[in-house]
Image 1 (cartoon, rainbow, N blue to C red):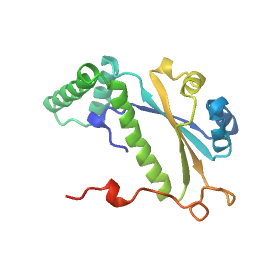
Image 2: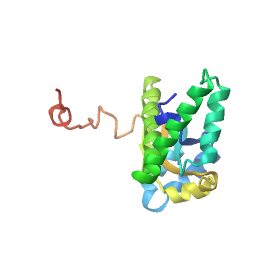
Image 3: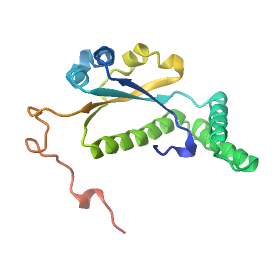
Length: 184
């Protein structure tokens, strides 16, 4: 389970595991994004990570009922406090910071980080791709009608010997630790 601020869980996943599913996913790699087409079509699976467009009252109530059903609240006072807190944070992002969509997308990226770590732990290679046509994928999977929008796609599987991006052929390059870490 991935962490989620106030347990908002503003995500949805579209998983392409069949050839037909990957062809549909590859529609988001046409035109300018054609460089990612093979990464989609040749993968074992492709996961499209999506974010909610809004967190309306209906969704907040659905979350509360789901948590209650799962036994998350030992009593009604705690249930109401959690619900109130979640709504306060959502309202801060909606009305004061005016970044509700961005806040929800950041939570999806927490999920993406956990996903990448999880598949790496299993020895499975992953290729995250922001180079996709969001609008095309939203339309292909009817995401906006469901209250979501695509964020990024991740292809998973096992790399081939000819992959130019393996660390033995092309070492990873990162900035020095002393430039990116401040130790107090």
